[in-house]
Image (cartoon, rainbow, N blue to C red; front, side):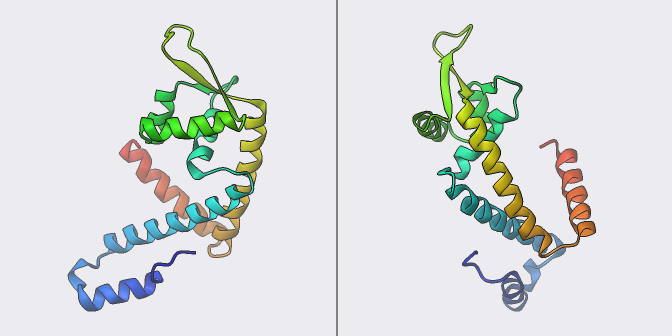
Length: 165
């Protein structure tokens, strides 16, 4: 888990030393960040079994979420995942070396290659997704009721939909 102070202690220190910075919005922001960190750590742990980094997993998930034959241009991938082109190149080279993606010629742009998920990549990402989802469920349902999960989901989804992100 995180090496950060438990949230209660961090907020108590802020209340004592900087009370004007503590608000509902501050508590919401810090709580969401801490929760995202916990889920990210869980994902990292689950992906180790498959030899994947979180970034590589995101690429495979993005490809698997496309219609068959599960392909995208590298620039569409890095825009979809908010990665730099350099970071994306490194991940794609490793995924290609591992046989999880392949690069094929672009139909209209001969300077570009399309990234396509291989059968091995499809199998790997589907198994990895099952593991990550099971881990997330353990973390979430050990701490929240089904009703609380649904309410949190509805609220956060409402916000991101309204923000258009």
